[in-house]
Length: 434
Ligand SMILES: [Zn+2]
Ligand SMILES: [Zn+2]
Image (cartoon, rainbow, N blue to C red):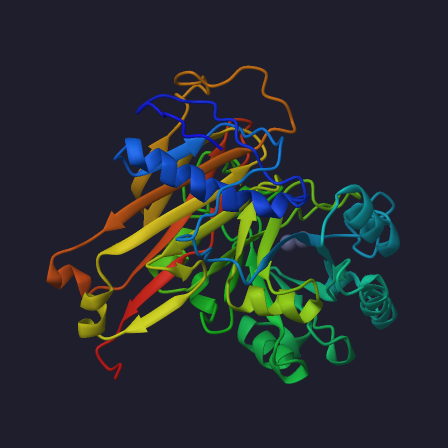
């Protein structure tokens, strides 16, 4: 491959030759970094973006300096939140467990999925069927179904409960006095399967508000930030539904209270369309229920509005979801921190932002606010073309500010309105850490 010139502040089309035996879309991010290096030779700004790459021919130069951060993991997409006819809402329209799992696997092309019917609507027999079907549909390396239910409390909001171990999976109802509060639910779920996950959703909906005061940050490591209910990220966000007006009930409100949430997306659909209104992506070692649980537990996951956007996010080399706990001296040594966002969109990427403790700290825009191409974007963008973005910033502070805890996460915006949110990296500073 020859050298190519890239001009600052302008979009360029670069044709490169890739080896013919690289069939996997997964590999595309690797090439992004080579582009990035080339780009940075001529442009000292923090950000590089590439519009498209043509795959033809067989040459590709070695990239010895590049060590991919996510190389130990594969990316899998799933919808962990949909309802079937076992839920009373829209019964008759939502389809059976089999129909939903078949749609998720064969039509939506998902790697994992989870039917989360309302516990309050299910008999013990229905629950047994839910668990059995999850096992039946799970085939390691091909598709993972996770046994789960939705705990639907009038007083405390909605939470989904996911089980790793089918044999210990138990159903808990929010109207049963034994499990009618979040703390009772955590205890019951933990006694059943200590690796189970409890995930709150649409916390800002005034119809089913979720007061964070009643949640335990230790027990809730994930939050569903997007579904058909819109985005619960913060008050006034562009994907918020108009009725979502419960003050203090947004995800950023919880992060400000010290919750350490990873982000997931799910459709919360009731009409036989898993995967259509919100997705969760996980960076997992393999496609097994256990590996997906490991990724979710470690928050090595992110949410999208439904598009299969590939997103890598690191802060100081730490992967998304990681909490780094340090004392004030160790904290000083962490800085300057390098913040890196790498994304492969399903449509042109309009903008990338990094949020630090609730405010946008870094932002790079590739299109104008109306969605028009800023400059020189190639014409004829088809569905097959991938959009690559690599954004890189350094964050540093005077010594005293380095002694404060903070979190960072990335947002990616596409021209077609789709979005992705990385889980945060948490830098937690504690005086008592040795
Ligand atoms: Zn719900
Ligand atoms: Zn639901």
